[in-house]
Length: 315
Image (cartoon, rainbow, N blue to C red; front, side, top):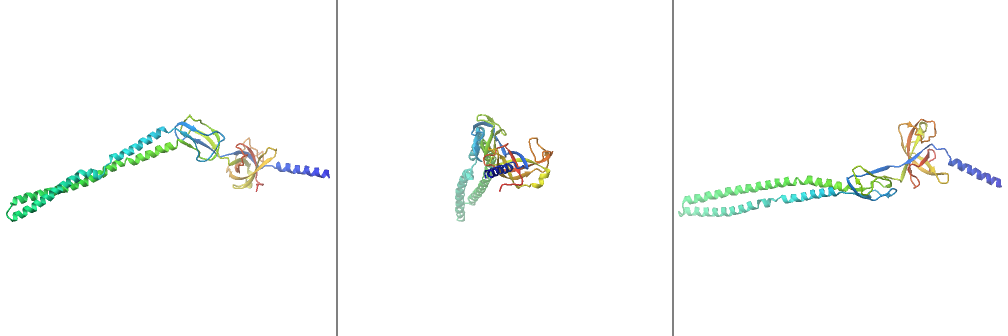
């Protein structure tokens, strides 16, 4: 009885060992989508609050570049916009004196018309001369002409005022664009993290001078990693983009840790086999690169070795 139990146990170990050492179809190393975040403004890096290994969220502010110069320039442009208002005038302000002159002329005209009509009655009664009536009539005509000229002056003043105001206010739009440009420079002084992930490298320290395009840090989204492997030409008929496959890595107990993956890329052209890559057929000279996306449970790391099997995807 003991013999059968021992034989069964040995058989189990043999089967387990065979499963763990099942040949792989391709192997490679894990990669990630890395983003190098660079400075978008020139100036001293006043603060830079991150370290390698930190996990950052999208949109998180991690640093501030000195933006004193664009701030002062924006304030100057805004002050110029405010000064434009004091240079403009309303039509009423421009025509105020002319309207007062019109009022005086109207009073004089009304008085002259009254005197002309009264003198006309006196002429009919032989109490006044025709010359007196003609003189008054001439004065009425003259005042009416002055009234017409003054009315034209009001129209001209209105047109000129609007033209002058338009010329002054036309300077406002370019200045507002200038303010927007300076505001954009100020905004770019903030170092905003573009993607969620883990900081892989830090290239700058607070107090250093940042330049536009200078790398500040490198970040990678570690939620999903890519296993880049290579296959031979005779393996291509077995795979397609979107195909689920089995992926495994070495585990601490000497076995394997298994994952499910999806083929996300198959190279359209062959290349010579990289020296560090093992393929199913070691004699193959030309291979095709493939990429397998694998959801990371926290154990997968960039550069880690992994193997893929095309015919045994984890369900």
